[in-house]
Image 1 (cartoon, rainbow, N blue to C red):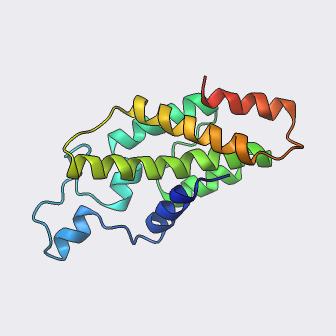
Image 2 (cartoon, helix red, strand yellow; image 1 turned 180 degrees about the vertical axis):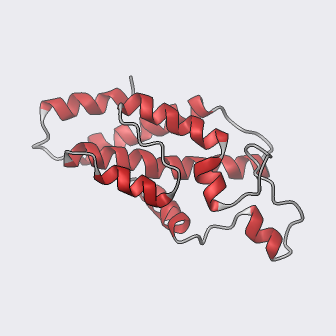
Image 3 (cartoon, rainbow, N blue to C red; image 1 turned 60 degrees about the vertical axis):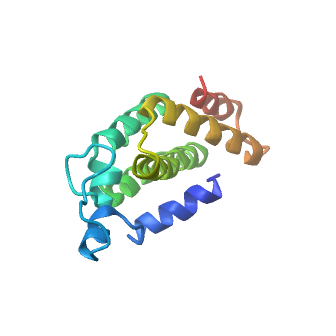
Length: 157
């Protein structure tokens, strides 16, 4: 149920192949390695995608909408918490939300670096949840229960 561009970006993050400030500074490509979203800490995978206040606010919005409190602190803890969710459909939808969260944070990071602008977490998550809902509605199995279909509508309400 994931959106392909979200999958690729999350794959790059999981394998730590994504080019972030700390790595670029270590290679001598840039001088400052501060996080472009909060400006408080070095821009590492762990900080940008799990510890940054901007990301945590986005995560809180997803948790509030889906009613599942994952609030990941690392990739491993996120994966462990997703495994505890019962129901394949709901687990896949929430996984899509978190994979999309990684993509959205990466996209906002790039906007902050290149365009010097940053959208609010509420606006970014509203767009993400809308995109995920429409992706789900296209690929949703025909045998999906009415309860799960109604639950998936919570993404856009």
